[in-house]
Length: 167
Image 1 (tube, rainbow, N blue to C red):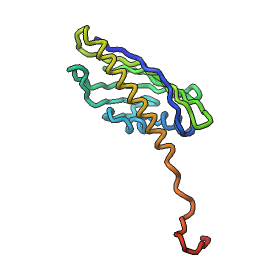
Image 2: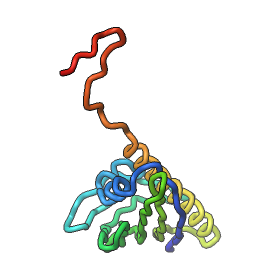
Image 3: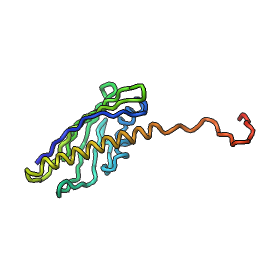
Image 4: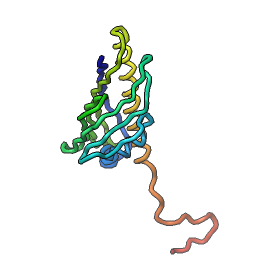
């Protein structure tokens, strides 16, 4: 039986919209920041095969995998949709510049097939929704952290008491 759920939200980031948008468009780079992902393989133009680590949902074990097509045609937006697999995801990140950095709006609809009795389906959907929300927020926080790493100084620091020589 299919377990379906959606998440929507937004998050303020203290990083430039350009850096966050570029990071979100780097699918393998984003996947490397996600602990639930086993690996991502580039299989064609904007096509990626995602393989997730095995997870347990209310006594049922699932190893999700899918081929996702990424769409980069709308300004300030990275979106995707599933082409094939036992897991389905359709979603988008919209990156909006702000005075302090950017705001990322996200919307994701997912479905997985689990052999659960009807009484457990809503609990499985709730658990999956909570996990997906945490994963998205953790990813965005990681991207913000990476984007805010200070650049190496262009000149060497002069130790206290040393003469300031121009090199």
